Amino acid sequence: MGKVYRTICNRRTIRRFQNKVIPKDLLTKFINAARLAPSSGNIQPCEFIVVDNPKMLNAIFPCLRWAAYIEPDGNPPKGERPVAYIVALINVQLRKKGGEEDVAAAIENIILTACEEGIGSCWLHSIDRKQIKNLLQIPHHLNVNSIVALGYPNEQPVVDVPQSSSIRYWKDHDGVIHVPKRTLEEIIHRNIYGHNHTDAV
Ligand SMILES: Cc1cc2nc3c(=O)[nH]c(=O)nc-3n(C[C@H](O)[C@H](O)[C@H](O)COP(=O)(O)O)c2cc1C
Image (cartoon, rainbow, N blue to C red; front, side, top):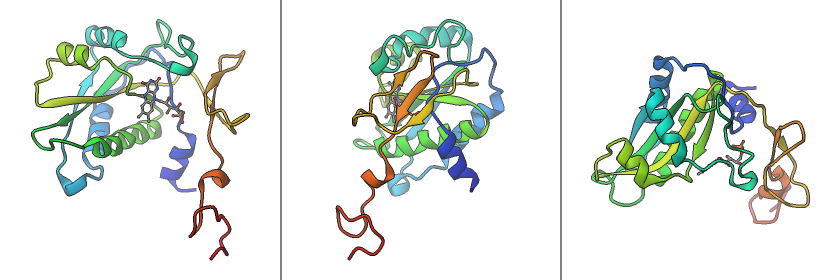
């Protein structure tokens, strides 16, 4: 199995982290992975703030909403909080509207590069943008899109087949998060919508 595909298959969102610092050069490597992502028209409107000092980590934490389906059970407990954040910004001077696809591609590059280094992540879009803009002194021409929370994993979520078609992730008695993923058969169509056999059409 190829390295990238293996990383994709093994990656899960992580919301409990070890109390272990991520080396600075690794955090820089993640931004480099973001820098090299595909970009519409190659405009490259994304910028990133790496946050890893304890004071700022503490300030950002209350701006984040974790695992809405199982709230508050998915909140990282004290001592298991992220040890770094990457704040993903869109420069609206470079690109007035759009940029969301660009930032999403860049974030996925960050997440997969981190995963390959044994670092877990959670992509957060339910965030208090106003507060984050204030805290990090972000100028007006930059919109806060998402935050990626990072740290060495302290949990091991698993993929499930959806039970009774619910896509809601859930936590079992041992604290393991189960993530239902729709089956391949459900989402794949070949040549014509609704056909899924290679000999269709
Ligand atoms: C655009 C986007 C926004 C997300 N926002 C949040 C969020 O605000 N809080 C959170 O805990 N998880 C968030 N997630 C993580 C999803 O809950 C998670 O990807 C999903 O449950 C599937 O789990 P998996 O990543 O392990 O496959 C977000 C994911 C994406 C792609």
